Image (cartoon, rainbow, N blue to C red; front, side):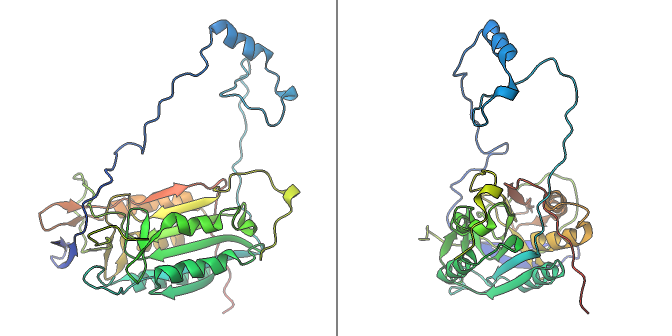
Length: 346
């Protein structure tokens, strides 16, 4: 197990530890995969021309599809207006899992500063009209059981559903207070349209403040700012085991069951996520930017500003390497999602 420390601009530093298995998932700098498919249907220019001239969109069956169809000869620009999710009668429910202490301190150190993240998220989402539920130091089985209760609720009157998880973690998993791991997909899949029909077509936002590996992100010399930080890395030496009202069918369009998700990670796959006694870089930046830019900007646009903000916070390791962090979001939303504050009754 290696020790590390992070310098601050004031000269102070905090110590921590990283260890566990070496990252077995190399991170590509450009894209996750590089798929190249040969042309399965070679065509001559004459055949292509014949297909284009004979194409009639008015007589086309609504379920037939052809790749990259283009009607040539028209230069009229196409007007476009991006759609926005309906807020519903109520903004929605927000669940916060805050894991601070774990059964084995030597493996999962206490996450100092996480309570500030929890408090910031709870207060913010309440100001935006959400009904917030906070759960502290829950095991893997408890987390899944709690999520199952929200899956079975009727969300028909709500506009969205949000889950924030603050914990240690590793690649695509988060740690329960028991020391075990939960596959992130097992959390999100509970709320797919086919598993939770009353949330079909509504935004489902999952926010994860947790490491996704043990590596530190490299930096290039852009700023002299540095901050003290600990790591949320999953420090293990081996891999661990890890009735609703259905909306009217005819009022819905067909859509993938995996649509309408936004999964925001505090860091990229394979890397640690930084945190100190003032909270994590990602959550504190997320809360600050949502408050500053909502509802003028949609959440995806705000996350880009969060990326910039977090990326400018630079730390330093014990072997004199700079450590940085860039969050990553997986966006499967089909419309724009805005957060709007509600009027206080006070």
